[in-house]
Image (cartoon, rainbow, N blue to C red; front, top):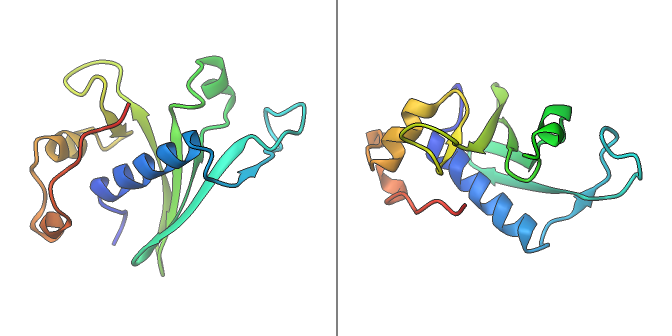
Length: 132
């Protein structure tokens, strides 16, 4: 496997944002972009076999500059041989405007929202509505 399926990443994103906004996740004090040293950044760790995920809001200078810190979610993933990261954002233009999308995988996200999924993921059930 090279990367988790889009629907898994969108589910991780949804769970992370729901739990972060409800105050249900532990918080860390990031070293960057945190002059007061406050523990403000919620972190989610989750396993969906064979993957392990860590999700958190983007704490980059650009995210802060564009006021997208609480919109952009970075998801780190790894299994027993592959690892990587994905960024999930609310699309601001085009056919997916207003939807959560995995940056760089917009065509797969469009198929996901249309209900078109590979046979290997059909057992996961229908896609759920995006929470904005």
